[in-house]
Image (cartoon, helix red, strand yellow):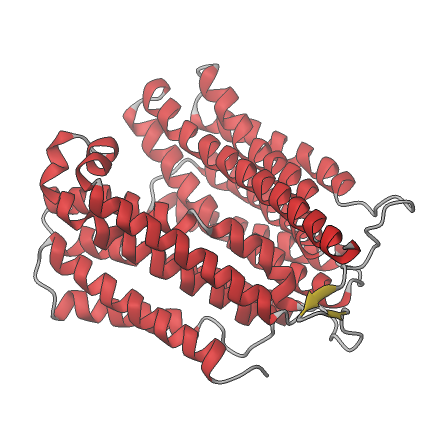
Length: 416
């Protein structure tokens, strides 16, 4: 009875953590969408284009922050110890330094004001460094605090932009304000990720995890976290970002303007199916790092169930989906809604399994994604008809093959 009660409490806590992280993700995405919406109403077309370009560059420059978070979370879950402050500072400083070095080239090539590209380096430093504390909290499975930290990072990253746009300021002032809010967020993150109180049952190390009735304690032989693990996680993050946008970029290159615009509308369904179950991956990653096979199977089942429900919903309400996303002009593509959703659902599976391979220190965890990107590019350019359905079919086939390969790598070859 006591064991059943403790498991029920654990499920309730996990449910509350999942709900909190989901809300934090929604807040982050909402703030990210508010910026272009306000910019379209408050800025001239030229200023909006400059700000949108800088924000796209910021998203790319933030990749080391996500890699740092994943690597640190896996390390914390396995060992529960280690000084990560220096590694976090080095990663953030190196990324900001590369951004500063690239500022003159970006200024000339993209016709941007130099002030914007230099401010980009400062915002990048704050964004990447925040990955250290997010990884600490995720690896220690302190998910309620992680949710609060995610909201704080989102406010720091976008709050200054929103304030500047509401005040009618230009792109430079908006980016300066968001630089300040991002830097001011860092002390709060440090406080949130501080050690638990002595009375708190959650110790400084990660909790033991039950697998088939036996607890798994963190490994005492875990190697020291270094730059190579962070680079591996960064490579995996970049590969996931690349493959998730590859079909959209190819559609822009290969299709007529109207058709590429229609594909962009359908791609919203892909992104929805891709990111909807990502909270599962975030919650399960520490347990994957500890070798919890049951957690991996449960996470995979949840993601498959979520994807299947979204694909079925798209098949039943494809017209409504396209009407909500793009309007009546795109209703002729309603029949492709399940295909767009299926691409996202398959990549959701792929991303969870890639995170699993990163967490368990597998070699070349992102190699299948780079091969998939190359295959998709070749197939779309050489084989696919120059239509929305042609590019979409290639994307769906490649996503299915990538999912099959990842399942084989994770389950078919055994664990190292």
